[in-house]
Amino acid sequence: MRSISGWLAGRKTYLLAGVLVSVLLTLVFLGKLTPEIAAGLSTLAVGGFAVTFRSALERHQAEEVELLRDIALAGSMAVAHNALGALKIAQQAVPQGVQLVEELKQEKGS
Image (cartoon, rainbow, N blue to C red):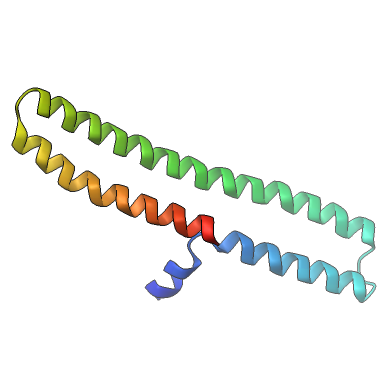
């Protein structure tokens, strides 16, 4: 299950958009929807997708701010000659930064 949710990370919006377009085209083809109504529903969906993208951007921004705060804290500890404290924070921040970069690469590639 984790592998499926990992694969879906950054792809759910695109999959939903593909399904929505396919359904709308099928309904127009079958005569169940007029092209005008389908265009209106598409416009409404685009607005919903924009909210989804904004949510993802806000999440990434919060992660970046947290990472920058950790870096600033490590820097202040290094200035105060607290090498052990700075090293401890760096050991936590580096994996978080790597994970964030991987998530961004994955979303950019999808």
